[in-house]
Image (cartoon, rainbow, N blue to C red; front, side, top):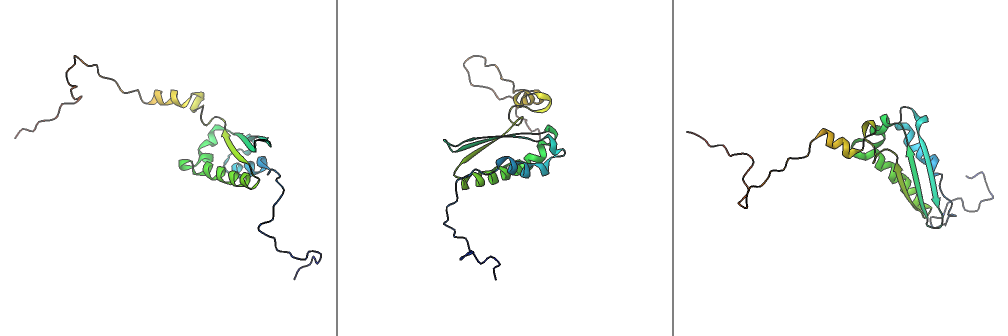
Length: 146
């Protein structure tokens, strides 16, 4: 029983083409990211849409202490967020790129990840070759005495 009798067929046709309006990317990203944040007011979302190229660039920034929660173990959370945003963009006939400020360029205390990695583990030491003879092993093999 349908209350609105003016609609002859209430079921939607799957092949119906919707107008190509852009989704509300800012609202969608806020909806997906804010539950992971301790202080949701720190979330900043910037969205740039190119209608001629049919591409969308979304840039987000948030407090660095929430980075682990947003990314999740092995990057699962951020990958799921990217998947949902990509699905919304695909329905609108667009492709989307999500950038997270501070994720690729900065590590802890404002250092880049390369500087941070070098500080933690020193690069392996190279051994100088003496002459053109075969290289010697670094550690001598143990000999067993019986």
